[in-house]
Length: 364
Image 1 (tube, rainbow, N blue to C red):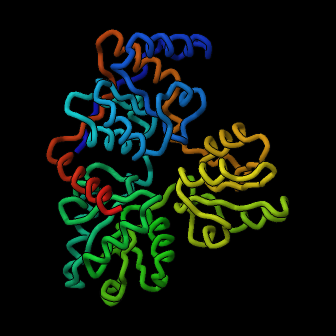
Image 2 (image 1 turned 180 degrees about the vertical axis):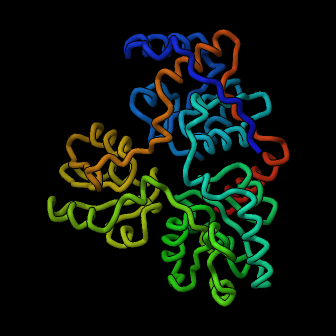
Image 3 (image 1 turned 90 degrees about the horizontal axis):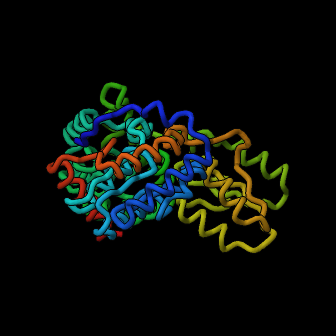
């Protein structure tokens, strides 16, 4: 398990102006120097991510932090599972903090350890098959550790196909956690028919699956999703094409199968960034992912038309909890010698979660 003690933001930070916050964050960062590294996820708001030493997806940022052993303090501007991953991969002397411990991930919370253990027992009992678990990195440390103990690996949206192939080469079936949409889109890209991918619903008896379906399925998908990416639906694709003839639709694989089938291109956050950065001036893109990233890409590439796939604000509300006020408080506390909102994974969980992560790094 990961331990963390939630401390409320002191009142004195609430009324600070944007300029005061910027000056105080910059001052605290300068005072801490090389002892500090700030990580900013792509979905962070601009007023926070501008202070990041590194910007990227969750795995890339965790690896970058581990590669900075001189930094005693790692401040992760992201969500809880990301800070856990940083703690798992970082050195023992490094301290990982999440400026607001309320910044969770609804997808990660959709797979609880007890539920997954029940699923595992029932699937093994009903099928008698060798099942290899794969968990998306957007999962808790406890789920990563479960996967590590049971011969499986972690994956990202960039390497999910390789890791699913890795799992099916070692077993007769794969259990994919916790995002059914990434799992389905990945399996379909591998040529696995939709009727050979069954969905386990942890809120239904026996996962809502007849034993015959458990036995015939090659991939068991956990019923979980990203609340941001599931907001995109086929009519958004159709509407974007009508309004902007010739526009290309690019979607994250956490979107539904139906949306990904209609898109011109599908890929991870890093892939989306690279694809748009390398596109020619004058190209048009409707992007199916979190709004802060889309707006940032549009601001950085004004010679291209870059719009959100849905004109409603598809924002990661939990990521948005990381505010300049929380970042300022975290850094100024460190200057005073106090650690707030530390995220620490217990040694046994860390050990097996690291095994699952290392299998990914070797297998991908």
